[in-house]
Image (tube, rainbow, N blue to C red; front, side, top):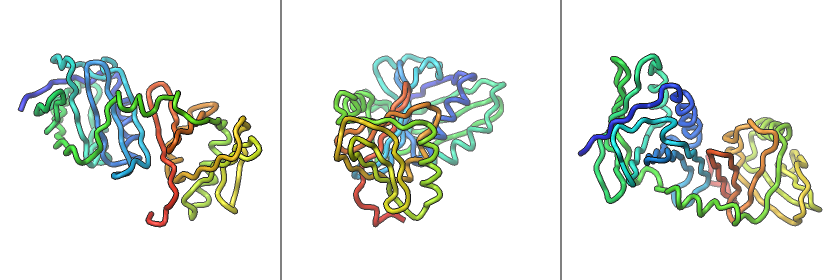
Length: 257
């Protein structure tokens, strides 16, 4: 196996860690794909079908100093038991350099991490890299095609105040598992059947009916004034400059715990 040395930009470490924490809330397995331009990190819910997907695409140079040239290649790091691992990372001291050493094996253009060691002064943290079957492989190119906004069917907006109310109502009524998104007489109405409903927008469309698993609502940050939700053939999409959050339409939650 070969080794790839990386230095983490100390001033960006907390920001990087916060993004890993957000992804770990969705799934306890995270994949990091590193190339010379970007860090593409994501987590997924669902095996045979993707129920939810969240990712960040960051500039590599902003967060990592690559000690050797990986040229056109990509190095994949799979983090199993991510929540526990992230807790260990919070112990790192930003007064010392944070160095990564990635042991990898080469498979075509992909460098698969087998072991990652982080050195921070006298402190070392090791990670046995996960296996390819632990998380579906998705590339930036595939994602860009799948989430091309030109392919959206329609969209609507939710104000920050309305969204906060929706999160509170969803939490208060914890017995239910789904949220309804209905468009009736041009009005976008979000509701839990026979419990509550809230009109959030007025659009040019009619007779639209979606249901989503409300457990994913808690994974949407409320650092916005208006949240635009793009509706595709089988999922809704929430985007900002560096991240995407996709939630599939689900029709049956009877097997959920």
